[in-house]
Image (cartoon, rainbow over all chains, first blue to last red; front, side, top):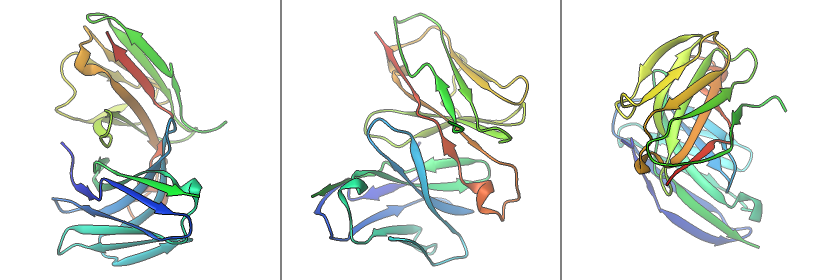
Amino acid sequence: SQQGEEDPQALSIQEGENATMNCSYKTSINNLQWYRQNSGRGLVHLILIRSNEREKHSGRLRVTLDTSKKSSSLLITASRAADTASYFCATRVYGKLTFGQGTILTVHP
Amino acid sequence: DTGVSQDPRHKITKRGQNVTFRCDPISEHNRLYWYRQTLGQGPEFLTYFQNEAQLEKSRLLSDRFSAERPKGSFSTLEIQRTEQGDSAMYLCASSPPGTSGSSSYNEQFFGPGTRLTVL
């Protein structure tokens, strides 16, 4: 079963705007990761945040983690049409990843 | 291309038939994972291997499913007596050796998937 839920399920924005996606999970975790999936392509790892971290940056990506609320957010700044994809959060407990249902992001040029 | 490869990319079969998928991980990655993804959902974990040892199996992996990694390199996933509910994208991923504190240990590299359609 899915570990968490993502919000919103779909997000449509204009190029240059920021996009924020949220993820909630249910159990204790080692770390939380965000992946992107383009139509017809495999999943690509974007960023990882450990359970003892609260915020992390990578290029235009900013991820936060609140373990007390069991939630995380992914912010993509200055979005581009190429950012159009599905975004998934995934929590790691031991070996496996448990994914959320994903947010479909559409960035209009 | 040195990424994870999967074969075939698409498979159409009739209900009741057996199918086998292959995954070739990135060279020197000792961990290999299988996931299943249905339309509009995130991937769901099926099983994973460390070298040739199968360390965990999901309850989703019914008796009709079997996975092997005989030499600790490529892996196969077989589905026997396929059902329409087995229609999905089957994803393979691999990750390198390392300690839990290293980023490389945690990131999983995914293949393009095998899309199975059971008629």
